[in-house]
Amino acid sequence: MNFLDHMRRQMAFSRATYGPGERTAGICEHISKEICEINTDPDGGERSREWVDVVILGLDGMWRALAAEGAPWDEIPAVIASRLQEKQAKNEQRDWPDWRTSPTDRAIEHVRD
Image 1 (cartoon, rainbow, N blue to C red):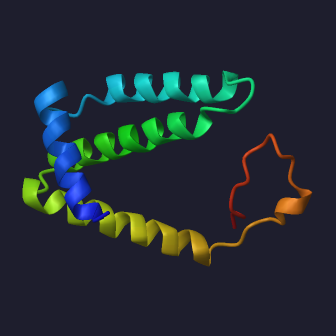
Image 2 (image 1 turned 120 degrees about the vertical axis):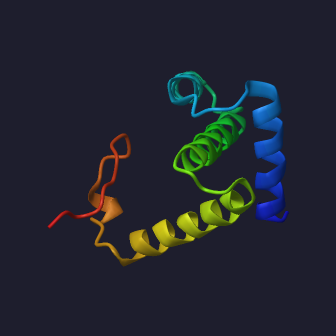
């Protein structure tokens, strides 16, 4: 899959289907519903499909935020890809606690100075 092509496709579908604008509250509400579904799936059989929904919704919110910030439509997919790479690199440079000492039902956050 070519990520930039995927984002162009997702953006075109989303704008045509859900309309323009940030739609932040609606996207956050939908993400919350998907998170609830992940947390209440008793056997975990469909969790990966719900996580895909969270990813798609997150990307939807991101392109809409970039558009609202004035990013040119045709540059948004590349900006998203760049920001994903930047954030991953930043996380890799951070100090993290030993996961073996962290409860499995709690967030593991980077060490703050």
